[in-house]
Image (cartoon, rainbow, N blue to C red; front, top):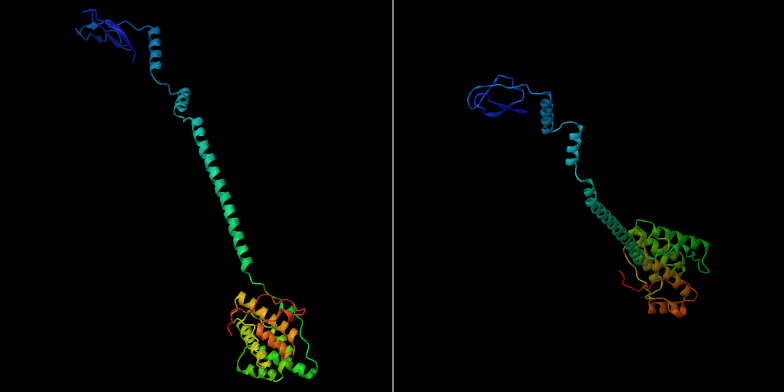
Length: 280
């Protein structure tokens, strides 16, 4: 509030009153007498108004702008502090992605390499040419033996299949070409194929009249068992090519549990050694 000086005319006491007070309305606070108060000049009112305005805080746009400036956070400082954190986060993400790439690359390559090491080498037995009938075998007998072999290997294998095998054995080694041709056509991935394959080896051994030739056999259908039995069939073909009807050569094969190197002729290699453990 704007004030001005007043003087009591009775006791000469000086004091301040409001600039808006009217003359003759002021009482001396000391003696209680009336105080003659002159009108305030326009200059004093203007001065008082300016003083009041200066004392009061401005509420205009400039004031709002100053408050906004004072309350605004130091943007530059925030950016400087946040930049290392952002860069550090980006760097961590890049490192994690790189590590993930190499780890995933190793995990994808490792199983492939391991699979390549343990995957069995399958044989395409269909590439082995069909054996021809022995000399002196009539066309009717050859047709009959092939029919017997087809019935012997047709599922399901059971007691009704045995007579077909017995009729083949009556022919001795003459039935070997028909038996071996049916042998290579077995589906060794099925339980039936594995069972019949084991029985065919029995027919072959019986036809050799006591020669203890045994190339072994696996009675399972796992990939490694399928590959093993395929090599056994291939070895029977090679043995027949080398020995044929010659009992002396079959004795040598039985003795060595395989084809002796000196008797191999030009027959292709049998692959792996088939003299490992057997279920027979």
